[in-house]
Image 1 (cartoon, helix red, strand yellow):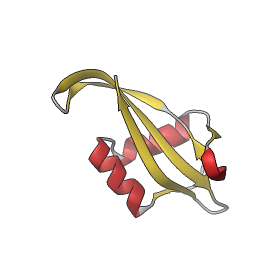
Image 2 (cartoon, rainbow, N blue to C red):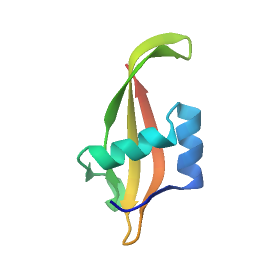
Image 3 (cartoon, rainbow, N blue to C red):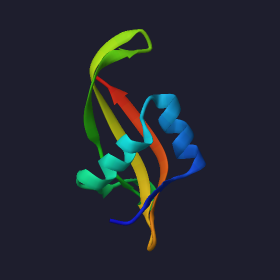
Image 4 (cartoon, rainbow, N blue to C red):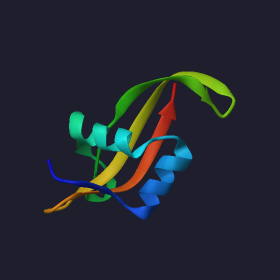
Length: 84
């Protein structure tokens, strides 16, 4: 697999939304990709969470990176995180 690089924007989004860089990379490397808007790609992976986020307890955290498959690397442009 190609190296995965998070843009500055994606890295900041991941941290502020509660995802680690490792979770973003794991999602890209281990689940199927689907088409996203503007010719980009996305994938979703659920991770066990069992913690509080913003004052509520959640059992699962889903990480959804949006990325571009460039010839030499995969560039993550943003990261969404959902709790449930």
